[in-house]
Length: 320
Ligand SMILES: Nc1nc2c(ncn2[C@@H]2O[C@H](COP(=O)(O)OP(=O)(O)O)[C@@H](O)[C@H]2O)c(=O)[nH]1
Ligand SMILES: [Mg+2]
Ligand SMILES: [Zn+2]
Image (cartoon, helix red, strand yellow):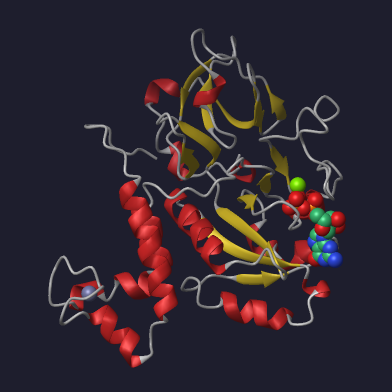
């Protein structure tokens, strides 16, 4: 089970009277049906009456009755990649993901501001982000892209790969071993499907501009599923996180912009906005040349966006 990502975090959630239930990991979420896997291989999972598949995310752990296969309950998630939709509901991109590969290429797709949004999302979800830079072979100045990514987030691993080659799987092996779960996000065309195919050692993902919507029917399992990686881990192919609307991401932003948020306690005023106040440690860092004013401007834009998108519904705490 450890190979499936099972750990003490989940085992500790079991009550004594649940010893007879079977733990199953959700590997696919369809409109009316869930797919599961256990140590023996594919495992049947039946939805209890009046429940919806939308309550489950790929990567979830559920306890099922071994005879009826009905889900008794879903275990608490260690991490959850989710985004809030306009109606207040959540779209679930994947659960219990350890590492989020944020993919961009060494070309016009590369955007520091967009990467900061992806990093906030990864941090907020509880996952560890890894920046994956593709198409270095097509850029005259690939080293520049890497250098520009260096200041994005403290300790952020940056890996340059050509996803078409087996060397890409080797370069990312640290995050793809037995029991580890990764998901891949990034714009269209950056090489995500190619990377997933290389990691899984299959051609299951459509690549090269064949849109999933063009391939409906031919390829019914392309969306939201968990695939085994040749090296022993698991990858969620399309977590379905496309718009990068920032809301309820205060902690995720604090992690991306730690060098800014850590200065705040040194400001003279506790509610300093770091814009115009005297005795502002953040402005002092800009003046001293240790903080890029453009980075500060991007932080401000994202924090303001996060604040203005804060849902107002009372008494509804965020749950992971
Ligand atoms: N030259 C080059 N092409 C790449 C690289 N990575 C991906 N591609 C190509 O870029 C195209 C888009 O890749 P795809 O995996 O479909 O991107 P996705 O939309 O992110 O899933 C495909 O034709 C890939 O072969 C790379 O590092 N170098
Ligand atoms: Mg793709
Ligand atoms: Zn300040």
